[in-house]
Amino acid sequence: MENPSVTVLDKKRKLQIAGIMAGIFLVLGLLFAVMIYAMQVKSEGPKRDANAPSAYRYEELEATNGMKLHVLETRPSNVTLASVQTNVSLTPYYGVNGGFFFENSLLSIAVVDGMPVNGSLDDYGSGAENVKYARGTLVWDGASDKLSVQVVREAADLKVMDHTRFWAQGGISMSLGRDRSWLEQIETEQAPYPDDARLRSAAVYDREGMLYLVVSSSQGSLQAFRDAIVEKVGGGMLEDGIFLDGDGSSQLRSAEKILTGDNRPVVQMMRIVK
Image 1 (cartoon, rainbow, N blue to C red):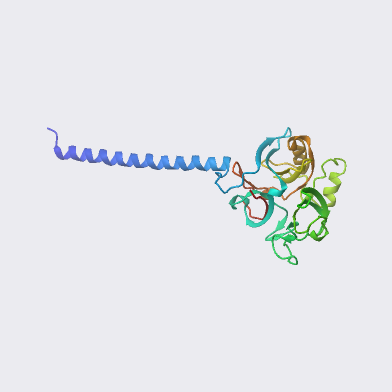
Image 2: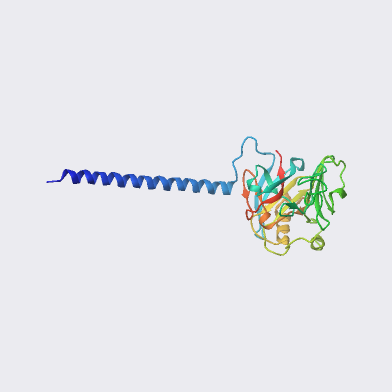
């Protein structure tokens, strides 16, 4: 004869086991959902909200030399420069990293409407100068709506029509269209680690005045990065541009893509406004 007390205990054990198994499956399901969400965010970038910039075009390109490029194309009038002091991916902005820096100080020009973005005109590291060297500086002249690259040491030496309507981003001259002399120019401007395989960033423009903010997700030399940009960006119509800070500072944020570099904070970025 079956013992009723044993039967009750067996039922309790079965219920306990079933409850434990259900809990395990629930936890695994939640972990799986979180993992899928994290993978989507990493690969696709943040979801666009109603207030996010939309007047730009994103492209992901791969050159024949294997360099993988991520490009934000927009009008220069739709770009400004901002001091952020954090990783670009952690800002509320869309855009790419800016010029060179050390700790919290800018070593590259970063000026908007005559004022440096990281402090006062007389402050070291404010963005009012390319520290130590005259370097290629991308300048948007708001009065003429024209882009140019000017090799200067200080922002005060920039030539624009209206000093209250422009922005200027310092970097290293790319010398597009001057293939015989560009290597000599980057040596003159003391480009850091030109031959190393590193992540790279740049800002270039075409003959129609469109601006392309470019960040690589693969490593290469400045030569490889420049060759990839000439091949894949701007449909063969590029006019000129500058190299920005690279390696772990090569960062991008848009609705379509997030690139975090090596997760380091940067001082300044080129920001898409709308």
